Image (cartoon, rainbow, N blue to C red):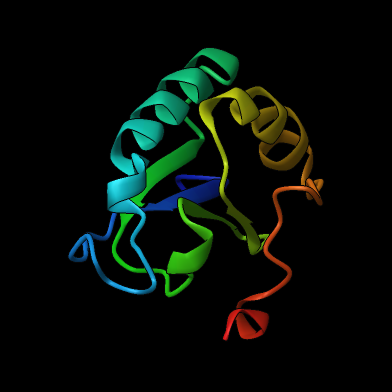
Amino acid sequence: MNRFKKHIFICENMRPADHPKGCCGLKGSAELRKILKAELAQAVPNNTYRVNSAGCLDACEHGPVMVIYPEGIWYGNFKKSDFPEIIESSIKHKIKIERLAIASFKDLK
């Protein structure tokens, strides 16, 4: 029996401020993870979805970055104002939001 239906990973990797790719940690990703976790707990109180911090997801230039599994939906440059839509569309109903989507991991290079 699986404990969680989905895992949502949000990169919190830190790099030096002058790194050419940037980093999610300097773009407020830790605070965004906390906010998403709280909003998701309100929207789906049965605790079947898990919001985790992650190290580098190798998509730094799109930061902050999240990936939703098992669907493998990648989002970049999201804000807390996007969370209601992410929760309703992507987490609850597996629908990718194109305006936030990073096409695929292989296309990031």
